Image 1 (cartoon, rainbow, N blue to C red):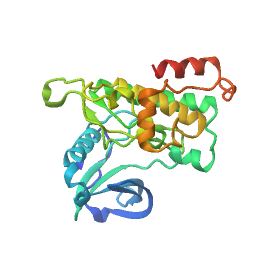
Image 2 (image 1 turned 135 degrees about the horizontal axis):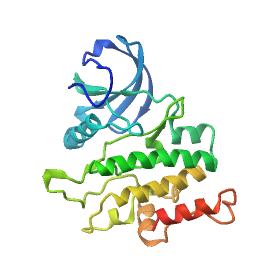
Image 3 (image 1 turned 45 degrees about the horizontal axis):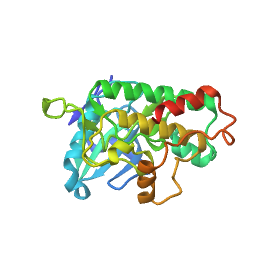
Image 4 (image 1 turned 60 degrees about the vertical axis):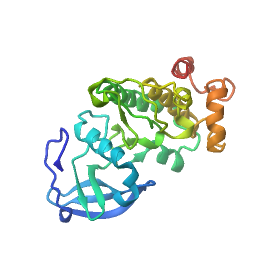
Length: 261
């Protein structure tokens, strides 16, 4: 597929031009490696999707690569290029040296980040969501694990494996009906059969992510997935706790409450 997106330099579709180093992440259908692009001596990330394990989700793969190929925003991960190697699809992306916000919380911030850091991360993530929504996309999996940080403090939203286009088939259908996402972050309307949902579902997930960054974990994360889904539908929206979260300002309390309504 060659070079994609609004990148300034072209990256080749020749796997021999990439020296694979260590594994830096993995999921159900993909593994991400740190690698060197030899012609430029650049550090890149190589996402390898196992096509044999994705046979029933080829539309998702095609959608993810297409979305990434059209991305041109400083707060959204784009793709340098993509190509097939044996039975794997390689997607070449910028390498984010600090990893995800989830990774950072696990190794150094078990109780969550300070308010100033949270505000900075959320501000940049919101810019990414605004851009995607303007382009007609719903991310559908906003969470700390998909917010990546570089060593110079750049924040980028990643992972478009479940991204939907609100303008599918040219009919500008702004309401989706498929059930995707990660349980703790899924908006109530996504769980309601037949109700459909739109980009507002991302704002709910963004609000849950704000709480995740504040506490080091998402609300309801200690419960089994099915219980989480029931609690999301039946319980009042989660929020900051007045007694436990005294380190946060009234502005933060108001901000969180407005996101989860």
